[in-house]
Image (tube, rainbow over all chains, first blue to last red; front, side, top):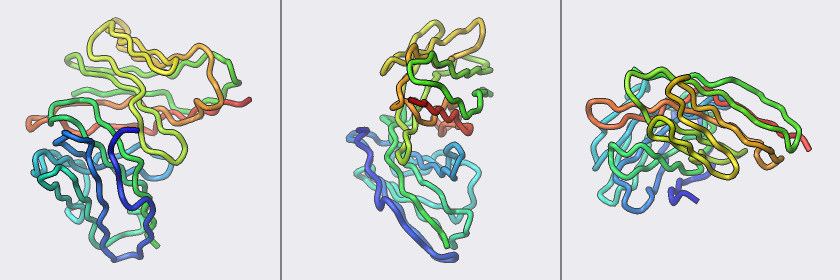
Length: 113
Length: 115
């Protein structure tokens, strides 16, 4: 049990729609990262938030955006969904931007039809 | 920058067999090294870590030693169980100027343990 919770567990959307995924960090963790894991692949880094500001981003288009709230919970928003966005989305929290151990949630399985 | 190379699977073993999953790195400094495990249908769990040369991480019977001379961090277990069946990741970790970036994962090694 990592103390990181994600919701919903599963989600089905159609192409072109928008989706919001949520993550509650482990207590006291002010840094959260989001990852996309396609079937059979390793997780790919989307972006990182530290104290409500995005301070790192992977190779994902702007339609992937996020928010972090004062209580350090976080959202991942994806606009104009594409079929290739179907994946497991993982949230990971850590204690401080320079802390190197990340604690992962169980993920949200998104299916885009 | 740093890079990590992990052996690809799948790796299929019989119960009680000895396990080695290779992970080698190239680095200009001494990065922290990790092994994460992903059980079917779950997120990733930190299995073990090492932060400097000659460190040995251990957990649940698994061990890995940060070996500077061979630039390796191989995962080992003396006697695997069916419950060890999972995907194992040895990710890269690198700081950027603004703080720690995300971990960089390969495809992982799918371990299958047969009874």
